[in-house]
Length: 360
Image (cartoon, rainbow, N blue to C red):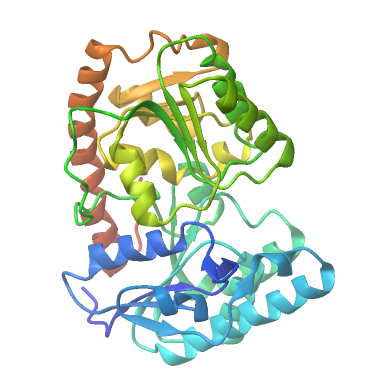
């Protein structure tokens, strides 16, 4: 086993919107901190938006505002910032394990090409990012400096032609204080997180018209037509409640705790290629899920921790997740969490290993 100074979890993009971290990067960093922190020093490296990250951190010089990705000129500026952040991490940490979060792969590969390091480098990849010719060229050069890939699908890992570990993008570490679960729920179903066109939230809300069961929709609504439709449905139906705003982590966790079951109505193939943090948030809070039948969610069917559908018409929301189904799912979630938790050890073994192996 290698003796290294620290495990560094680096987010060279450090994406933010209105000064707040955007995406799941803080969450993933915290997960790695929980997993590796028991054995040694973990450093979370990110731009100035990471000032609010609670934990051992190294602030990088730059971060990227989501709006910078809107125009070619500012996009180029963002790329330069990402490369400089990548170089800063590689220069500073010479005898460490560095795990790079997955966002701007072109900038990541370029910084690895430009800056030699004695550290062992791992990259997280949710989908194959070496299809474009420029990425393929950069990766070919950077590849000899990368020790392995962490990915959610075997097909992705195989494309990189270096050792890889297939692992869920969220691993249950049991350190998060989950609110004590009440037997009384304020809402039967909930849809939480950013509400955009890739999720058929309006379609779900319409299915709750005229039934007794309650639905809470909470999160920032990104589309004006969706906002109007959802607010109109909530106004006309007492069993539908819409809260249109960004949720703090405390609010988000509290809403999950008072909701009996979570709905994730994806329609965008993007989610099948990457994943959904909300599915894991629900299961880690011991809530069953109802979501689209995507390959990435096969484990929901396998462990019977929820229901997968092909179209929303397959689900009768006035009857689905009755008491027997609900209790059965709750029992199965315990088994799922136990198996999911085992990935923490596999991740440690993969990252700390001497030999190059593939684990899937």
